[in-house]
Length: 148
Image (cartoon, rainbow, N blue to C red):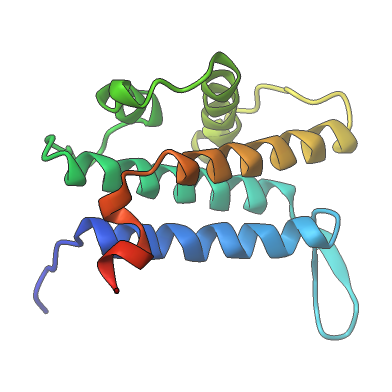
């Protein structure tokens, strides 16, 4: 089995797939709904999907600008490497909080939310941040530019 390195276009496609799955969970009020109508909590999986979508998108930006991408860069390091994007302070705070939410993967909980609704609002905010990243994406990375 050969190892294949993805290019910026492929990373953007994977990013979009993760964001689409996150959007589907958002549309069901943060629940994962099964065919038999049973529901389970979906906000942590949603936050992980958004984290991955944003991480892949920002890595694609780095590939596009020919900057080195190390395999295990933290989201904060990827953001720093993309300093020319000039993200708003609100987006930077959202991304910083999104990275903190992912601490559960290490067995840590920062107890960031007073209630489920606050976590849901944050997830909506993170989705909006993802959409803004698409707005500032270099023209050469847009699908319309790649596939005329």
